[in-house]
Image (cartoon, rainbow, N blue to C red):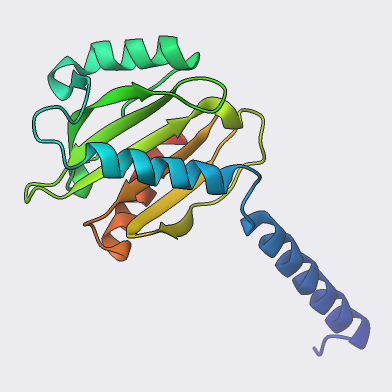
Length: 175
């Protein structure tokens, strides 16, 4: 049975509409570019530190989650990225645009580091898929959900590997 011309035109119109919607959805939301830049700067400042990369070490993870949750005014759950090859180093509180933000630092066995930047300023913003940006020599995967924005940053983890780690973090945080 052959589709009619009307069915073919309808299918084409639906495809075009879905394509336009997909492109619109993938655009950077307002403020996301600034979040990416701030996440890259924070990572550049703290990731080289050997003695003081974080305020609260991974050994005190329960306190870290409670403290960051209180300061950010939302529930913070530190994602376990061990299956993706990164161990938690710890976290810290940083100044944000209108309220505090959090940065969680992770490290691979070979010493390469990544930071997960957590920004509550995006509450009630339009959600996004996992997006990629490059800020100077930092690779950044970021996304927004209904509560906040996240950016996973690294200078020394390659784009593909960082993308897999970001997908893991995204999945864990979107549960």
